[in-house]
Length: 393
Image (cartoon, rainbow, N blue to C red; front, side, top):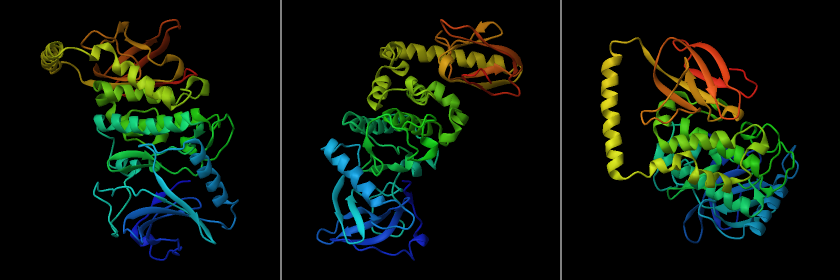
């Protein structure tokens, strides 16, 4: 179910359902079969979100029944609240509708929600409309998403519709929402969900949630839509320079492998990788003195390089992106291995800055595999090299 926020003008002519104990103020979201309303409790005056699903809708196969089944599974399997899952306070029904009462997301302007026409629920989708998240926020939101998803997976259920519009912010915390497609974990083939976040194999199990979560993290990092994966776009240089963004990019690439067996088995595996992956290597645990010295050396080296480049041909940055087999391959240009200032090799996916804008002979090398010779590439024309499993570039 794809619940999208609505503009005030779209709410004026809506039929307003009636549910016990709540005034439905205005429509704030609509899915395939249900509506989400901004509502006020009669007794307390507190604002909540109320989702309403009709029992009988033309041309549908019992959407309310499917939602009841999903909510029953959620309550039976999960059994308790989690800080990164949207809290459902009450489930009820009228003669015509199923409804349930949820926490209300903060306003998209990051203010406290109010019963005003300007209110729009704060979703990850609305945040990403303004561009990629800052590195620290990106890392925090990725962990919150994966913690909520891992809690579901450990309970033996899968979400099946992980996407930015189903990630809400409540009191500054990201919460995974919309459990209408939740089901027991299992390797069943299904096309239920949102198409562009589904894995190519069609198995909607925990590995499908992993695939979708990888795409959501990719969107947080790059600010690009999911169908641009794995292109890094304008943020490539910043990704390479930020250990946190680099770690998240690697995590997303590993989660979105086309072959399901090559993905993480569940979200807990993604969290473990985030804690122990390349972005958390011992090199990051330097003393303050070593960090200061390294920063000073890098600054001096950059100044010297900048002076030198003023008299040299144009320099460009080039994105190197690989999938599957040659993931983390080392990069050789004209027979020379490409190294960071600290002497560690560049490994794809990455961006290399300051490359002469001319023709280079490009080779990827990974231990235990034959070299991938990409031939001669003119960097004055090509700034992004994508190596796919079939060898195409």
